[in-house]
Image 1 (tube, rainbow, N blue to C red):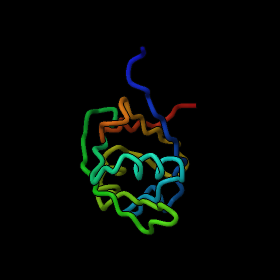
Image 2: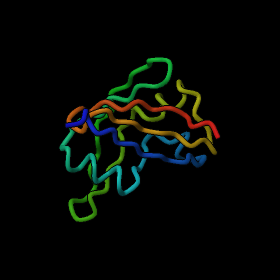
Image 3: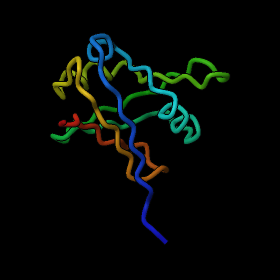
Image 4: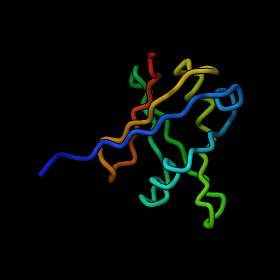
Length: 105
């Protein structure tokens, strides 16, 4: 009997990913969201800033998902930039809340 299973997804930001209005999610992350059936995703950065993003599902065949338009604003306010690796951490698979932090290497 353990506590909730923490799920972590990482993404390295390119110039486009750091400044674009949406973020195309990597396959494992997209699959997790697809299976959870979340309509929205609450992103919270290290300072506690929260943005609610709607999910944009492109095709059922590929299960491709992008964040909604909140991504650009969240990325800018979080001071994420090209080259950063960011971590999305979910404390419970039944909650649509992700702590999003920059990984320090």
